Image (tube, rainbow, N blue to C red; front, side, top):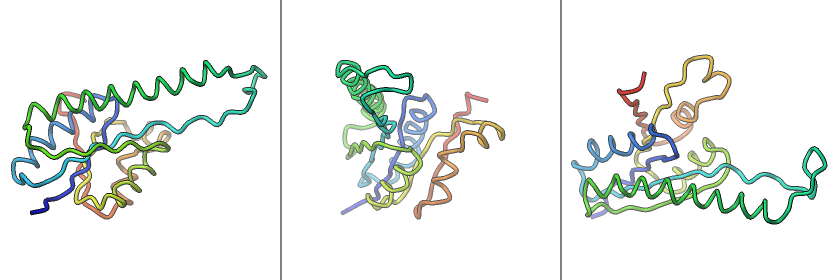
Length: 158
């Protein structure tokens, strides 16, 4: 029997890890056949030319260091997420998806491609002005994906 696909967008933040815990506590006990899809979006790779804006040459060592940092960040976030879901159950079917680019666009397109039944996201709790300047990934996704979106606010944060 095939269950629902529940996508949880994870990143380096405490809010996303709280959303993952909330999802496992509130959504998974009711459907043992569901699949948890952990979605992490790396920032888009910078566009490199031989010179940066100040005219300095990028060395291959610097580019390799940036790529290594990106890989380490993916491993760190997925490792933290794994520690959380292993505390809940060893029977959970988990898929890991890693995208690169603008988070709101990558999340929306991945949710559609995966055919997710639900998207779960943490809320950073930005105020009106910060949200207006930075935009809100969760607001964008809630307006643009076709499945239900659960935005989880961490009650310990104001």
